[in-house]
Figure 1 (tube, one colour):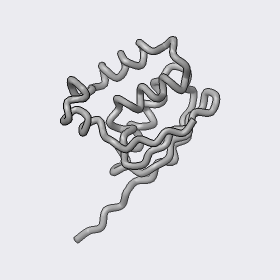
Figure 2 (spheres, one colour):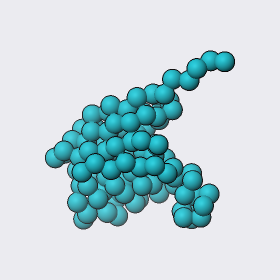
Figure 3 (cartoon, rainbow, N blue to C red):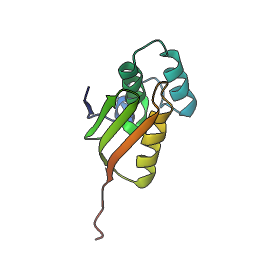
Figure 4 (cartoon, rainbow, N blue to C red):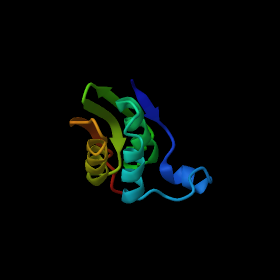
Length: 107
């Protein structure tokens, strides 16, 4: 399964789709509530509410208990937090993090 996300959580919050901007507690609670869902559904839920897994071109590919994430993020912090978010999903044992950090040019 390959999913590409094009809107950000912040965009959905500002447009009124999300009632509040998700924090660490709400993310963990949402993931735990979906324990009966398949691994792909749990990963999809985490990606839908995590600001670290949103981006203009991020793909998440579950392979058994391993997840491969590819795309571009704005900082090394976002790259690490995306990996940590996926590792918190029930059923995920490892993450192959192939996210690239966007280099900004100095003016």
